[in-house]
Image (cartoon, rainbow, N blue to C red; front, top):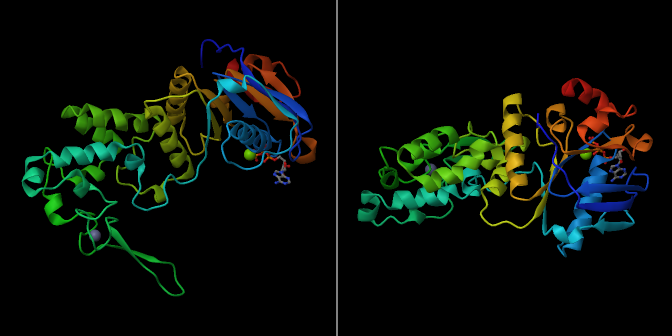
Length: 342
Ligand SMILES: Nc1ncnc2c1ncn2[C@@H]1O[C@H](COP(=O)(O)OP(=O)(O)OP(=O)(O)O)[C@@H](O)[C@H]1O
Ligand SMILES: [Mg+2]
Ligand SMILES: [Zn+2]
């Protein structure tokens, strides 16, 4: 629970929001703070935030996107936002060879490190040899996937371990290159937590710095080589969050999250909140659609939609700090927050 709420004065306002069940409402989204959009299922949260706010700002930035849902005007400090990102739960990469460490660019550094080892230099193995996305060092039988998929008529595809590399994804001579006894496959088989420990021990600061955001968002338990296609929706969303946390260059960005805590344990929610804080420290704006009271209670500002789902919804029931929402008798969110705040 934060000791104080962040104050704000700049905002972006949507006037006359009418998409789907919205009742022509005016809503202010504060900048540089964490806002939670709450309300029962079907109350109009996604209609307001995704269909209108996201698409309207995108259009305002001259980016291609879907046509926004019906609204009258976009007002306020629209120039203060230079980029907008909708962080969804869709897979981070389509190829089964893409994985969390390639997404945060840590694998590029690990490949360079392997290319610097004496044996690699002697054999002429460049960093490209340690890639599973290009031919050279990867197993050509399975194209670096470690598995082969056999299409079965009338049955689900059969995924078998590659007979050539036995699931190790690289050619034997490439696997013989080691950094402190570990080859590339051993590294891919480590969890993020183990890899951070290992590279910290050997003072590979740049690699540790790139891996750290994945640990910060509570993904320390996944393996470096785990294919993106096998990550859960919530895990994919957090890999994207890690990517934004690790970015060096920044323009003031509005980040929109739709239920980022899905599947998260209480302990991980704490980590996620710390990651949100880090984004705010960099001067970004967060709009989070959320049902989880442990996140809602930490918001600087709440926009509570309702009162019900469907036609009976579409109104802005209450807005303000969690303390102010608790005072609102019609707000379901207020009732739930009451216990959390006392
Ligand atoms: N494309 C659409 N056409 C017609 N009605 C829609 C459309 N999209 C949503 N609705 C309706 O508008 C209302 C608000 O939907 P919305 O998706 O905004 O709710 P939500 O608050 O995001 O709910 P949830 O928490 O379940 O995601 C619902 O009654 C929904 O059935
Ligand atoms: Mg929704
Ligand atoms: Zn193979």
